[in-house]
Image (cartoon, rainbow, N blue to C red):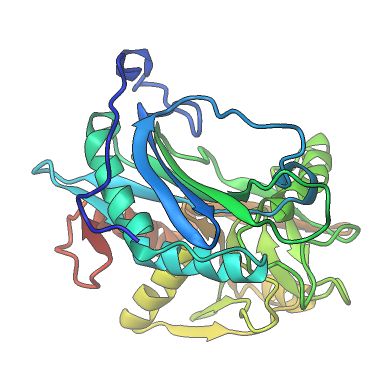
Length: 354
């Protein structure tokens, strides 16, 4: 355990700041000068430090390479008009990371390392925070197994890192989605609620096949019946049906509890919307579409905030949507983006000042 402001720092000898094209950031393309590192050895956290972003040395028997004991988080930092830096809801990410760690038999990351270390790292590399709208310093904490063994068991040692980088908008256009019926993302009792690399690796083939057919992503269905909606790509999914916001519930443990999802649900309820977290079948969506009641469809997540769906295909039935008429979710997206830049005075207490 470490106290705030006590993490040793080794600064880089040469900054990469001049290499960043802030006019064409993309997502996950650039990385800041430093990273936070901590090791878990013999039941204790040690070697907590901030040092230059650089390659890591490891041997071929590193257990994460064989058995995928790895988890991660994603969050963002922004500057407000006065130059103050805020991270959006980092304690929720810390709690979710430790839920993921428990599921994968990994040690929990102490709050002092995750939160205080993150804040010090962001402060150190604050010049990498872009100033454009819907741009941010993307923050990627991750934890992986480091024991050198081929035995199938939980590792005895782990490494925790936080890296950051300037990022632009993840999705530049509304998405075309098709309903996945062959592959499944998660099943009850599995790791669907955990933010682990294996969940994403298993989704890549389906995503590639979707792109070959001219679609941007897939809408995942439940593993048992392929009847109930789960997630869209790597995001939570939401629907406005009539005057109600509807989204799949989390009770089966197959869906990631998104921080953006949580924030949107709080905001929708606060604005007086009727909100339902429950099972949502594809048949219900088709019926609502045919009746003219399926008003808005959008994915939500840290990277994109809100990404609108302009087309949804199930078997031979295609649902097309006028994204320009999706004013409710568009207003919600603007609210969240403005909120992250501290334009609303933080009424929900979502901002952590650096």
